[in-house]
Length: 319
Figure: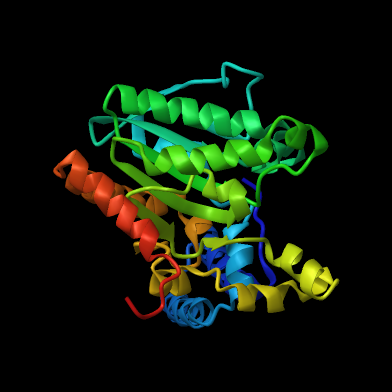
C-alpha cells in the first residue's frame, strides 16, 4: 500500500523513516548504532504523543479520511470468519457502495453490513466513493431483516461522506430509503451494534446508524454534513472547512459527551491506518463484550432500552 502522509504528521513520518534508514545502514555495514537508534526512537515517541494529543477537529477529519485507513472489508477480514457476501436489493440492482452478508465473530453467527470505499480511482468509481444509492440502503435493510428472521445480531460499519445526491438516486427514492431504514432499525428484534469506523456523514451514515450500542473509533468523525458542505452553506467558501469542523462537534470525544455515541474505541497511536490489525483487535474486544451483554437481555428490555436511548438524544436539561 502506497504511503500517504498528512501535513501535520510529516515530521513524525520523516523521523520514523530516518530511524529505518539508520537500522538498514547499520545492518548493511555491520556496525552498532543501537544507541543512536534508541535516542531517535524515544524522540519519535515523544513527538507522536505531542502531535496526536493536540489534533484539531479538521486534522481528525483528515485522519478519518486517510486513504490507508481500514475499510469495512478490511475489518471483516481481520475480525470475522466464514464471511458470505450477499448482493442485491431484490428490486433494482446491486449497489457496491455497501457490502454485507453473513459471518462469525468469535465463533458466533451474525449479519455484518457497511459502507465500502476504494483504495484508488478505479476502485472508488466501482464503489461510488462509498456513497450509496437507494438500492444500497434497501439491500442493507434486506440483510437486517434476514438477520432478524433468523435471530442473528447485526453489526454495521459506517464510513461514508453521505448518500449519493444524483438525480437518479432521488428519482428512485433516496430520502424514503433512508427514512425507512431509520424506522426499521429502531424496531429490529435482535441486538444491533453500530460502529462509526471512519467518516460518518449525514443521512447516508444515519441509514446504518440506529442500534442498541453505537461505538466510534477514536479518530473517526460523525456529523450532519461534511465540513466542506457546511462551509459552503454558511460562508459560501469551502476553504473554511476547518472552521466548520470546529463548529460541528464531529469528534468522538464531543459526541460521547453529548450521548450520541456510547463508547470510544481506542486506535493505535497515529490512527488506524498505521496498524490496521491492532485497530481491528481493539474493535473486536468492544464488539464481543457488547454483543455478549446484549444477548443476555430480554427482547422487551432490549427494545425499551433502544427506544430510551433515542429519546435521550438532544436532551440537555429538564425532565
